[in-house]
Length: 303
Ligand code: CP
Image (cartoon, rainbow, N blue to C red; front, side, top):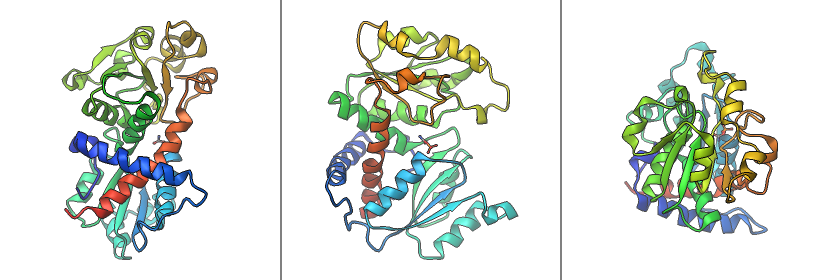
């Protein structure tokens, strides 16, 4: 496999290999010397056309821990503002002898388009509302770490499913690994095609929380809703917001996840996000080892 464009395109065996490789890198990251020479002489460009904190820094750190040379590109402040195209931008970066591109773009399919026109390896760091494969890998890796395995577990993905690339990649990853998946949110934030994906659907957050072992809570993506948010943030919090009180009223202790950034006090209260049930910062920690594994395996691939 030359690229990681989406979880839809990879197999359960691919995911298990990424997890086993990430187990090794996580052990390396806990050593006093965290750097390994695996990607020495490989140059990676992180090309971000959309904002990011976690994904961009996590990839950069993963690349540096693997001893790769790293350059970072943000569309803001670049010649994209003068009208340069995506392909021209990337071809100019590749002319500087770059081997791999990690790209985030607001358009669905942008990394797939690139993969048909360039020779370098591509990792999709999020394409619009479509896929965010490394987020799904680190989410499943974190569930496996917390609960021993993913197979047989019940995972509720709660929030703005319609605009979420995290939801789609998680659904593909969790199903490939043998978990049961439920999506939960207001009907206006659940896509019409969801029934074709073989997931349960709920519009009642209590029902979802009572059903699941793990709740992966998603952000309400105001930037993708063009001011037409329904329900309003206040209504969303009233009917779907998760707080410590509702978690304590359940007859079991579920695991709480969120890919970040959190709208604190909207989809998740601080007393829930910062509680002992939350593995939100473990997800971030695991992201570095998982991305090291992805980059290492792609660089070693002969296909
Ligand atoms: N989870 C995630 O993709 O966060 P960023 O947008 O900060 O990268």
